[in-house]
Amino acid sequence: MNSGILLVDKPQGITSHDVVARTRRLAGTRRVGHAGTLDPMATGLLVLGVNGSTRLLTYLVGLDKEYVATIRLGAGSSTDDAEGELFDTASEDLVAAVDEARVAEGIAKLTGVIEQVPSAVSAIKVDGKRAYQRVRDGEQVELKARTVTISAFEVLEMRRVDGFVDLDVRVECSSGTYIRALARDLGADLGVGGHLTALRRTRIGRFSVAEASVLEELDVASALIGAADAAELALPVVHVTPQQAIDLGHGKRIDAAGAPETAKGAPIAAVADAADGGAARRLVAIVERRGETLKVVVGFPVEDAS
Image (cartoon, rainbow, N blue to C red; front, side, top):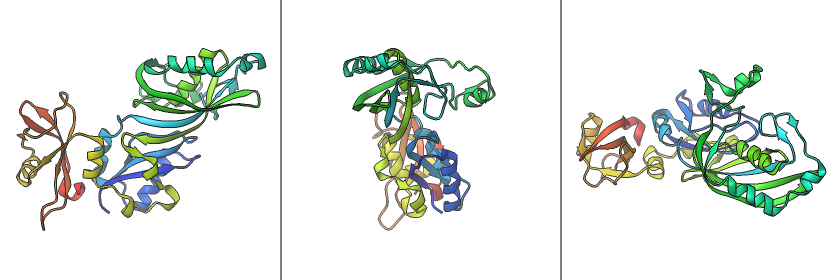
């Protein structure tokens, strides 16, 4: 089985690890990883790496994301989503007072660069133990706020359902943002509580769920995106000559001429284009600028990188 990146549309009700386990069986290899989990309740895009391309996942995890979701206003939840126990259900009068103008005002406060406290039921480690496990063990978990960027937060539809207000929303955000926490904080700002009832990830960087395979129909061999193609979608690229590819393969530095200008330490994908009658196009390495040279950060052997 070749190396590459897979786009999978995760169905509801299973974990991201379940998707990885099934893909391992289909691919006939243990070397399968993912670039960011989705809760069992959530659906949508999972980016998987197969064989040597698992090394590329590190550079995909931090890409920005897009989600569509449904926020229910009128009650909080112990997990900030529909899988938890509801509490503090708001009165009919308070819910009735939630209108489009107030929702827009609340969303504006949660747009841009904000400080967000992640949901307690999250995979963040606290003293070496996942926060969600501490919650399940009956512990009180208080996570520190982190800076995230919400570049778009828009209401697609607003409707009243069974004494609640449901908002269908679209969110574009930086990696590490919790959409459940947005629902919680919007509800808190409006004084009625809020939680998530549906979540779908539609994009990671330039990878779209529209291009993803349905898990039940996944054909790994035909669905694989080559490491070079995937890297070009995620990172700045420098095209290297056959000799430079050899040098990088030996861990040598090469001249940075022709490489894109990047911030110090920023990753660049070094790609060798296909030669006439020769080697196929491949990802040679992830490199970074060091003065006037490019230094290998992660190498991709020929068998892993085509």
